[in-house]
Image 1 (cartoon, rainbow, N blue to C red):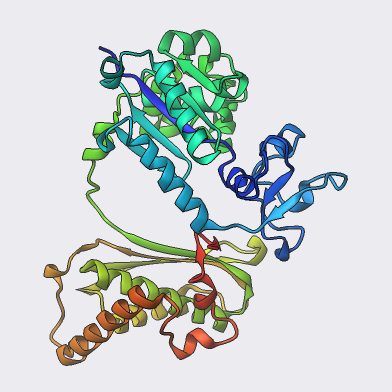
Image 2 (tube, one colour):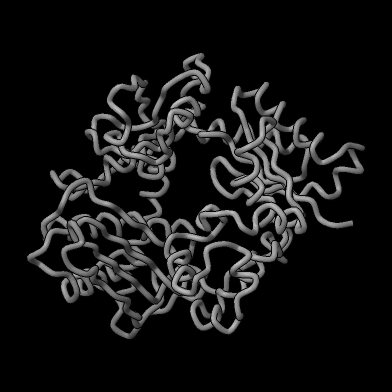
Length: 418
């Protein structure tokens, strides 16, 4: 029996939640989820289906909304959206085992429903309707679903086909895909085809999936390298990866990263303060996970992109999760690579080659007593923060005017939590 997948998306999820919480119909209410206090340039995380029908695009800026349209501006509440998402996930579990669910994002999942069609003695469309009805009756959230014979076709059926049918259910198999979507444009409507890939294909006169499918593969491999394989497979509606494959996957290398787009343009010394705060936060993660690192990475982006980003990576001589050691290494890298005369807008740090702390190693000059004392302090900090909140205990640097940790501890995904 061939595989059958569903890709379920919660329609304009954040905006729909805000409407439901207010007792309003998302399809009859003009609402945007945005922090209006940030000015007209604030990003709208979601707009209600009603506003979308009037031409307002998701992920727009407030200034993009026509002035004649009156709307509710709802402050983002990420904790609330996570609660709704968890509740909806529990609905999926009523019908499908967690082994057959892949969570793609807070508002989107893939389900392998292949074994359940015989179990429930119903068609895939009947099962989809049953799940969507349950989600709506339980939460008031409208969902759309793409159904396909592989993960790619299910996603494309959701993104392209389901939007144009009244029942919010799109269905594709390989033959239907070639018949209906081979000549669909723009290419950026297709999963994993961004503007960059689309522009590079356009150089070769390729504007649709039919063009990719019938292009000389040598041209595609020369342009995209090994990634051409994915493009070619998808052009033919093929995708060999299954949810079981995703569940089994274990990366050969682990890394822990943390990035910030700063609230303002920061001077060099203020950016260094933010770097120190970020290192402190992520080192506590290393300790909490009982892992160590021997490789660090720094990326610094500048205001208005007036110069190229700077930074780099550095292999350090020990495997550690010591704040003192990692802080010193990052400060050296920052001072060696960051331009002191340009304002900073973005900072990203990463710890690479993450391994279990049983592989912790130090050199002959290491002060083991100091490290043990530091480790006990870090574990105490983790315990306090887990019990009483991230802002329960702070350092002096976190109280400085340009510090961001206190404020960001109140955010989820960079947005207001409650």
